[in-house]
Length: 336
Image (cartoon, rainbow, N blue to C red; front, top):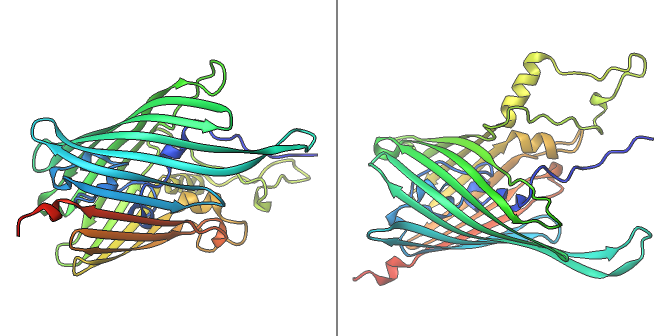
């Protein structure tokens, strides 16, 4: 008899890698290299923090899988000498679970949740270059097990004249698990090096985004044991292998996330994203559907912005909903 199981991941605090806003989800679901004073982008790219975000407030909520919900609250403040800051409180609630032992006997329920307090800082070095960093205090509670950790993100962004081209380089989750869940077994954090760019057309309200994830790790391939194409030949005992070119192309595309955004009259936006790695890993064999695709919209009216995205997982069987609300409180205090 052959059995297959999951390893549970290679790192702890993986909730830090969840898609951070409806706009990000709508354009592929990772991060964005876009400088247009959208504070919700700074959670994954702190080099976008600027004085123009002063006194902004944001709330993001995601109806994820099953009973899992997550989101965050954000607030930005700029100080004349210290610079611009964004404070973010992240949360994820995994819901309730039935407590049972190896015999199947049940003993009530237990819960699990994780939190992170982020303080982001950004500074404009010149009209074209900016830098930023996020400091994170992390707390995780899984039933009776608790853990604390610290992490830092660092990022840099280049913006061309008239903001037509933007490029960012980001290192996420450099840190340590201070208090392990059990004993002295400290687990690594989900460290990742990323690069991204976006291009906006001068006379067309269209923007393209291209991201390259996991620069630190080339091989992202995963062999699905339930796929008949990966079965072992009963005569030779060999497993089918991709050709060199096919394997290279497959691996390359797993690093890339593509997105597009069309904005009408600076008020209404439509966003489309494609995440190849997500499609390959979450599609149901012979029924891929729209797995890996996401579609979102955004509405901006005066000091308010609302964004909504619906992403597709598991061949359309699971479709998380993302909603983000932002408000520029500074507009309320302006003199008429």
